[in-house]
Image 1 (tube, rainbow, N blue to C red):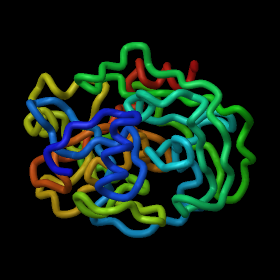
Image 2: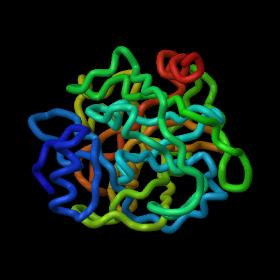
Image 3: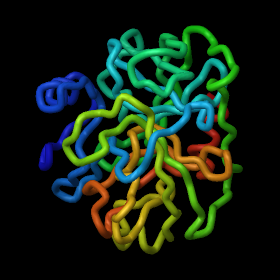
Image 4: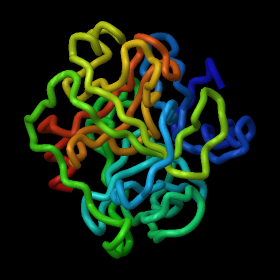
Length: 267
């Protein structure tokens, strides 16, 4: 899939189904083309995760097939990346919660409404956040729980560890794993992030996590999925270039940015 530029929706799903044998709408490859950010979906260098350790993790599904990750923020609401929702009508979307298996177990609830940030920009991937309002509340319990947000305006220091989880492929071009995966990555400075991608590509709504040498990068995680710091949602997997490539860390929607934080809490 290297070199392909895909957006969300049916076209992305068709290409991934043909190449990878899995439906992955709204899941572009990790290759940045023409200097444009590319949403990505892969976790590389991690290990299996227990959903009881990350009970807020959900699989966002389009017509029953996994397309992105998401985070439970209320019993009736899930946060994901805006680019995951492009081209997918609410009636076709659902979430699976409470299961580490990608395609079975847990609770499956239909999405009633998609609230994409009004300033979302598909070209720059800025304001990459959407709130999914569920048709019925999730039943909280073992393996299903909301994640609190980091405080608005807060900013972890460089080197702060975070955990990324999802069902993204474990190698570039590989098939999706059946089990939930996790990887721990440190926060990188804004200066490094802007140096890696260019100052104009990194907005105040974005933050970078990963390893400079690329040896154990989350590879931008599973699009829309959680990046958690000290048990609080700090980022939403958004975009990147390469797959665990040196000098190209994962870029995440910054939950502490007031515009993002307020949108999540007020939607």
